[in-house]
Length: 377
Ligand code: ADP
Ligand code: MG
Image 1: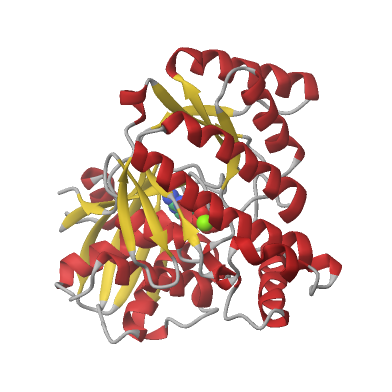
Image 2: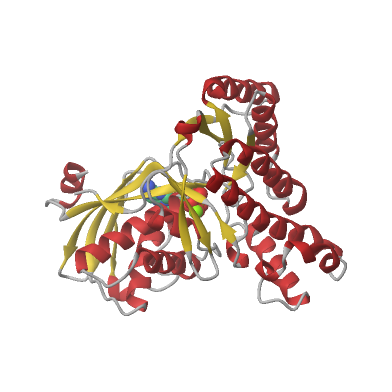
């Protein structure tokens, strides 16, 4: 990283930071409904080498970018001013400024092993790396959760993606060996021990390689539907509809909103049940909750796709205890909870089924719960 930085910018960086991608175990499309989520950070991370500048210019280069250096004056940062991938890091510098932290210019070199657009939250990793680096470099009085909120604001207002806060909170606030049980309404949270190896289990990540694009309107459409439903029900957010009151509430909704509400309410309940099981050490019982969550995403929320449906079905048939699509949807990655001795078999079964269906081979890896955003050196 330091060498690459020097090659691009001609001097040494001040420091290097990393922020991870994530997989969400359960709790999908609940965050923007003020609900519960349960992500783990991945060992995969965006790394950034940074040196402050005194001339107010922000220069950005990514090993995974377009091969060009973005060079913009911090004073000129405004929504719409920066296009493409560089809008994510530039947006964070803008959001820091909006919050009263004028951090000035800097040179930033990025390198990452988080697959992009795979539902593993490379965008939040990119944002959180910039946020934590600026906080540390300038000694800003900001907690990791406050950095996550600023990163979300950057993605919402500067990049223009109406995402919730889960991805940024996962990248900034996860700890190693634990899942982050997060209430997205007030950001209260608890680290839930999640060491699968001790249970003889593994989490297999199956990247379907179907590129989702949550900026294309489908995500905004379901999000709007949820907001309309909360309005019809007279609730601040769908989070405020308890599972026990779901059935009578559904009769008060227009038909097209019924499945959306059913997903969000049952999904919040699945997060609570999953946390209770993990607290009891009953990791295997998490499996059926994952699979039920996928059925809800597929049949009610309708944000899965043929490839992720096939990956889930095949993984379960081949011995996974449960599986579901993770991330915003319309493709991306599937997670499968698998007894260690069956991981290879499950991966092979999914790949074989993809070939029969004429899909490209999925990318496979196993995930452990890693550290959130941090300084590397
Ligand atoms: P996800 O967050 O699930 O990976 P998104 O569509 O939210 O998918 O974000 C992907 C976008 O984030 C990419 O298209 C790119 O603009 C940006 N991005 C992520 N990682 C990098 C990187 N290492 N270098 C440059 N851009 C990146
Ligand atoms: Mg993203």
